[in-house]
Image (cartoon, rainbow, N blue to C red; front, side, top):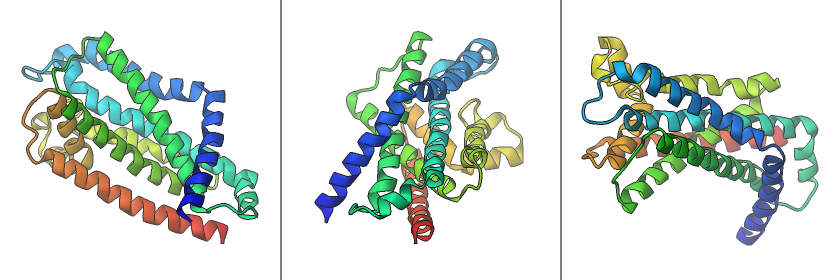
Length: 253
């Protein structure tokens, strides 16, 4: 049964990845907006923002990476919605394949596409002066957090793609996720915010994730931020996975 699942997922993953290679503009579009924001904030607003000894591009990058992921998972919802509307799921049901492999193929495609977009954004940041003396272990930890974050948001995208009534509704759910980093420590220190806004910023998931990533690659003490970040990512991932698989079962029942 396990071999059956992995084999089916691999075949369907190849199908989804071929769709990505035929529309490379999807990855390019996903990366262009975060890079434009990186340019805007570093070269227009960066000089007016005090981030201490950390250069603003180094300070800003984690938030831009999270926005990159939030933008990218909208395409997962879009592709799932298209498959639902085209009747491909019904055809898969008539074939001897593991049902869960259909969802996992979309999720893994999202992970691959988003990782490519993240690499493109980091390369752009390097051209703008981003530097890090962090070791391999720190960068592996950063990669692990970003992978968990991508998987968590992708399973949220699965729910949207399966539940949406229109193509616009399938991708519009990502807008609040893109906006969330703006009310966090991603762009400015939370200490500069007024009381209620500061409380929200310091207690929402993006701030702990941003802080953990930033502290890892700037070689600063991570403290409890990394455990809070992991708790948020794993918690969202588990809840989203349960809801997504439940929605999928209802849709194909």
